[in-house]
Length: 442
Image 1 (cartoon, rainbow, N blue to C red):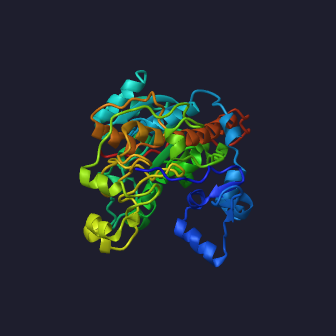
Image 2 (cartoon, rainbow, N blue to C red; image 1 turned 60 degrees about the vertical axis):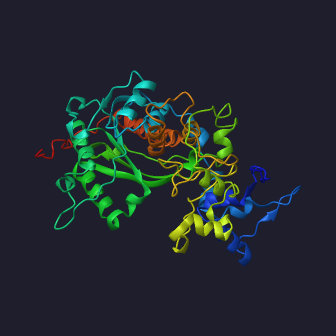
């Protein structure tokens, strides 16, 4: 396929339409509508014919204000006062664990069900205590008193609510119940839970209500709840994850938590696969899937950054079948990525019809190593299992750099807790009651 010209990367002062759409979380069509109405009109960049936005035009948007006032560099300088220890559940292939390690946390134990993911963890970190198997069969009580942070991205399962009070027992039979059981057995200082954005509205919000109620019932105060967009944290991908941060109630008076500042710019596919600010070298060769001839012929017609709607109408109808007549954009179908935009959220299979992620230039799915780079794994992080399994592991992971950014925020929280613990105790103050425990009927 012939390469097309693309606008130059934005400087400190100028942003392309694609970059502004990503930063503001709107579509390019919305920007075009704002242009036609005079609400936000791009300028012609001097020296070429590309329409761009000057930073001064965008300062009314909170997202741009955060980029321009970022404390990213200062936050990089914060070191943990001691090696804070983390127990990670549902660890997968190690995206969150590696990010937390880079922030200064020491892994006490990692639990994961899938054998290939466990093999990946052991392959890259022989010193990690990887416990393979169903979490329901793991006893965590021997770690009581040693765990500073309990982290994990538990799979979101439907809860039953009829006649329930959204308490701990109501979650029985779900993997969140096992997460909560580990909390009770270890009594960590801080909890970190991450999940897909969809958890916010799952079952009309009742699932998140149940989780919040159980966190409170366990004796923890929720001090942070936010959907973080990975592309703001040096990740070349539009992935969104929900993070919850809670502190044990006897420590909450000393808690000070701030979410990480965004990086100064948005990373793109060029940053992911080419030598530059993110990686020192071009992406190494690796295994990958391929398209059948018919699909390859269709995707060869799609320009960078476009999807099935860029195809001739007769090809659209043939390729989309009944989906052609349904509502919605289905922008992941027949999708070719662009060098100058972040990747769409990676899925577990880059070649399936609903989740195609075609290389910007070559008409093929992304390779395993390209997948890993978009998730900001280092090139030295090797994955075990079949190619299909490796895609699945990477697609399910928390981006390493996002985990690193959240980890730095948690380090600052723990440093604040340590400083508060070292303050002199006020005379004649009433001791806190730490004795409250739930009774489990397991």
